[in-house]
Length: 425
Image (cartoon, rainbow, N blue to C red; front, side, top):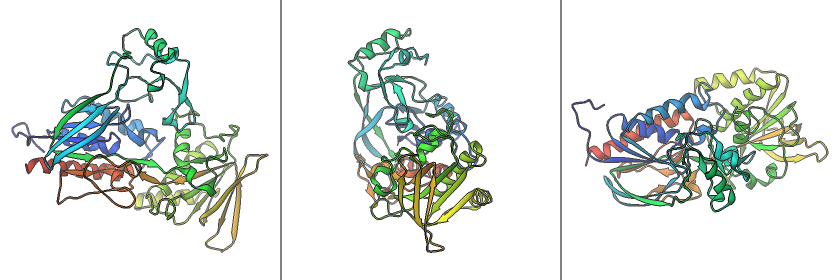
């Protein structure tokens, strides 16, 4: 670590992505004396962790880790944060990159106090992507309670409408600027860390599992939002079709994962995510029957293995080793039936439950949209780190599937690699 008498090497570091990996990378580099540009496409920092109810290993709520990191960013003048921003182009080479960053308008300036008057004035309701479409939001909204920056944002969908004018009129602080325009910044940096994260695999592509066809088939990230106190159901886990309390639930592991037609790889965290979500169900429904259909259960490390054994000891949790072949619905009751071949007995087994949860895998964001830089990818869209070339590095789930702890560890290492690039200039 540099001290007050040692000047850091010249140059700046750019971190693309403001999720847990990007936050860690930016903070580690800035806190040893380097200037950091943190670029995030959403109007808030926090990434996927912000959408969770709890995360491993301590089953903390997102506020536990994110609040501390947001405070560290706010207090560190070396970190310049750009939200609603995207990389348009990267030119140059190791140690000397020219990056064009497009800043999209938020239509809300620093005067915002988060009073919410603008949202109350809006009549139009839009799909809330933060809650995976399970709720609606106003055209003016705060992404979530502890969003950073702590400022409302106007959806581009209402610009030019009467709602936008109503929101502007309702604001007592002159915080709404409907004339904001996109702008591009040209920044010079010595190294770039791509912490562009992951997306849940699109479960509607898996025809045989019923997502999008049946109301009571949801994904693992959807149940995560249901369980969250700030989620669409305010922490209640209930059937989407009729808000019925759960008497039974099935978790379908490897939904689209380890499948050559979808994601051929294991996403590392899905088994533990489902076990964690089983604890959510048990907290709310002490007597509910929980069925977990799996190919192989993976609990990497002693702590995760202990967690698995605790779940397994629950007499109302049933583990069925077998890949699910089909999910169907009873139109009258809206119950769903999960069908699989039991790999232990060789028999076809079916289980009817109130709701089924598909444990969809992690897909790197770059799999669907390649980044505007000279990067190497594997066949699944994960960025391959070229340490010999240096200059640009992938951190966290942009490089491989990982949990929060692994992402933090990896991001710390990538911050060091970025610093080493500058030190060699």
